[in-house]
Figure 1 (cartoon, helix red, strand yellow):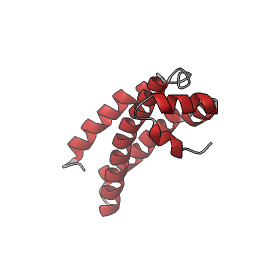
Figure 2: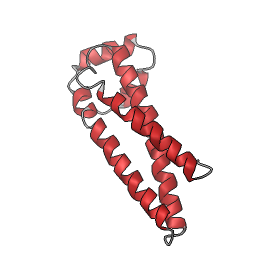
Figure 3: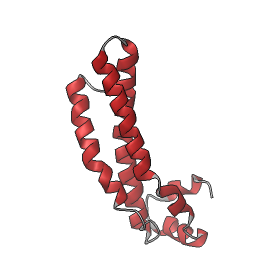
Figure 4: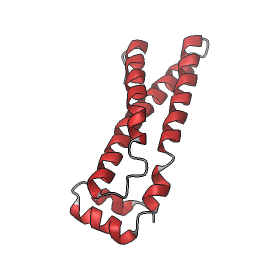
Length: 121
């Protein structure tokens, strides 16, 4: 996952830079299929980074709870995950507000959106 804390810090900086890109899609998911797909891909890219940060920090923290830097890193990872969740809060309600026939059209005409068929309606 990460060879050391420095690599973790590098990914943290990357996450902080990418987080605002999620908000760029707020209010636009229903515009067209390619915008919806781009939003999903942006979210997945950020989600992969935040998950890695969280898991690494948690494992290092539980490895030896006496090392305060590990505890601080895990606390920071929890905060980063919270920021990710806040940035993502618009997605489900906005996706569910897209009319079913419009969403079906997007899925049929936009390669890459077929996975949306599994989302709950």
